[in-house]
Image 1 (cartoon, rainbow, N blue to C red):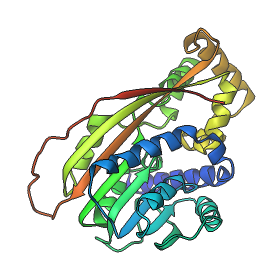
Image 2: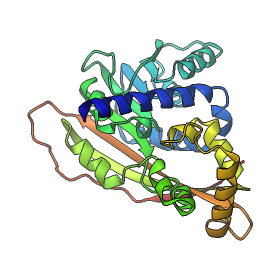
Image 3: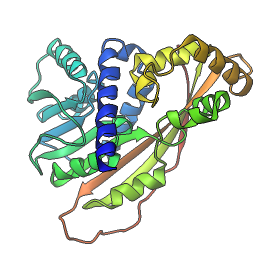
Image 4: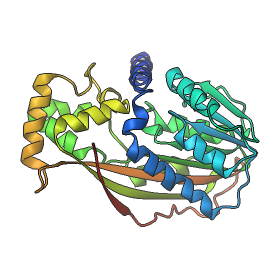
Length: 303
């Protein structure tokens, strides 16, 4: 059983790496929501007085969130890390075209669940929308805490349980066995429970709900493919959501159940945000409760 689990995890990582590598050039064209969530995530730092000397950005993608970090912390050393070497190369090229900055900027390709980095070496450990693609998110959380320096802050976002529920329902309507193909996303309480197992203090989680609309199902599928999620989010299908027969069936199911009065189809995305501060191993939490902030809403028209 252990061998099977390890093999499955390896296959999933390879699948995710290929999906996002193939999307490295098209990602920014489609990543409107990812940038919005990144903007909201970095706004959490407005409530801290942290002045980090070393920052780690896990799952940097094409570097949008890394650039937000650089704009805020101009003299810090920033390490931008991603599982996809193609994404890292794209980030490196785009950063090289920009004006020089005061702080050092490093790029590397690595697994978020097995960081090749020294423990307690970063004052700020961030990740914007990468955790949902990791086979075992708790491993990633433990790695984030391991490399967090005393006095440091963990800050990240991930997709929540309600993400793509319309797609899940439509796939299940076509074939009940399809329901399990869409990757499971955590709810805010299970995320809070996972964080509370770490040596951290003052954890906070909150959530936003976004509704994106598209003219038809193929437009949604193309956007998911454009950000690497069409295949990465679908298990058991080598081509992700593609295939003429599947698209036709999805269009029919979506039209019947998730189309607005203006003729556009809906796709829900739930963003979960979390932050927590370093706590020495063996010390009790100052407060065992995990506060949950109020939920917001945003409607976005897709392509």
